Length: 230
Image (cartoon, rainbow, N blue to C red; front, side, top):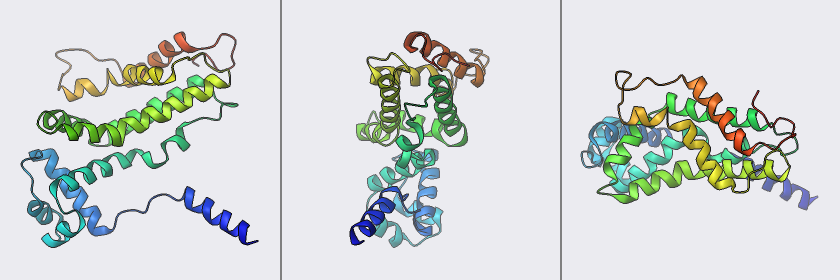
């Protein structure tokens, strides 16, 4: 009985989502994000963040202690909008049931929704600009965001390959390839501020469908159910 109770408690703990930040911390993180995006890393100090957040200066210092710590926390807060704390649970399919085309489409659509609904483009510009002087910014942005995405997609591709759904001998390489197919026409033109007068970009729906089709033209397993895009 005690063992069962302990097991249940352990299971509940393992599936519990991280707690939302306290109201004051949430306000500080939102304020810092706005200020960093507007003025860059060098243009922000903890006093300005406190004023913008409407909290006491000491509250900011007590919670974060330094601007670097606050910036790292701000990046983490930004990526949480994608639900990175359970990326693998949400994205890694059941290999016995996985439809490769459907899974890839859902993955791409979720990523593009995150880009459209958040400050991802502005944050990427900030990281590119600041990382020349402060390389840790790019490293942390990658560690908190893209790395978990690549890890989850790699695991999904490996599961589907093991189940005979796709023929993918190098799943991590393939994960990077698929992300490139999706993001090249969506995020990078925005990061570089390339407008329609410079290049005519395809629709997001077309980008996703063609990315899935191209990916599976290489990795689909002949005769496997669900191996071709719908």
